[in-house]
Length: 330
Ligand code: CO
Ligand code: ZN
View 1 (cartoon, helix red, strand yellow):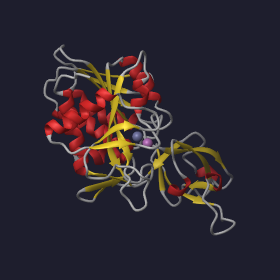
View 2 (cartoon, rainbow, N blue to C red):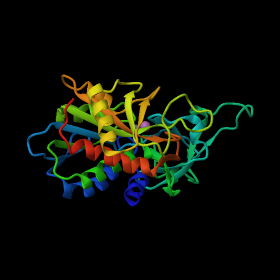
View 3 (tube, rainbow, N blue to C red):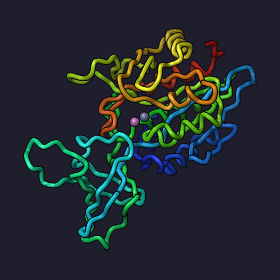
View 4 (cartoon, rainbow, N blue to C red):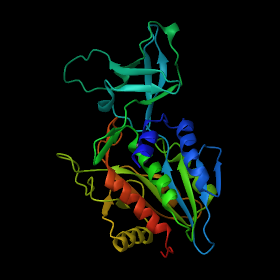
């Protein structure tokens, strides 16, 4: 899957600008599905029909990534910016950014008043190397993502936008590996998750599933002095119990655990102390949906260098295919 992952993570796709990623994914899923459509929000919805005996299942992985948006341009051509999604000031200084038109830049800051001053966005700017304002190719309203190449470290993989292109890659690979399934499975690649699960809200309403499963990253707490959480790289897919936005449906959570045990797939239970996924939007859609999440433990989430374990990715695919290949009894 490494080539697929590299292709997806290196693509430009901040929230609201998912077109490049959507076209890439569409090329992979179209030959494998019965129906593919794009809704008004830009969600890519690919249906693989079952034999009629199963359930209506929605899988969701978000295509968008966090970024920055230009809010003001000064006379010298320096760009002030706001954030798109959960970007933190400590993560961006010196990082390179990439705009949709291919323009690159870096993030600098005003001279701090003292060496201990905390970095803050209102003192930062993007420098695209323009000699003057007239030479700029980008301006107010243009959005940039981090620019960082994919790195294959062997067992671990590192890149920008693992959140959540790794979930997109798991869905694409699951579609490739899935033999005929009893269920009507909607593979939904959502937009605007990082700004409030907006694509999942509309796509879940449109698909109206009985069961919803999000594929996303979660915070690995296996680095020095990390938060007190269970998730670690290399210990298997994380089966969500709770996060900042939802309690997983106990039937869905138990089905994931039982499937992992039946197939001998390592897994870890996940209680994420903050943050949530598209499953929250699915769960509260229409009259309610039985929803859960399979997460890939990820270090340095929302930084330009998010790190995952390759076996966790492969095992997430196995777990998902295992769930979709058998009757779903909740
Ligand atoms: Co995120
Ligand atoms: Zn995410």
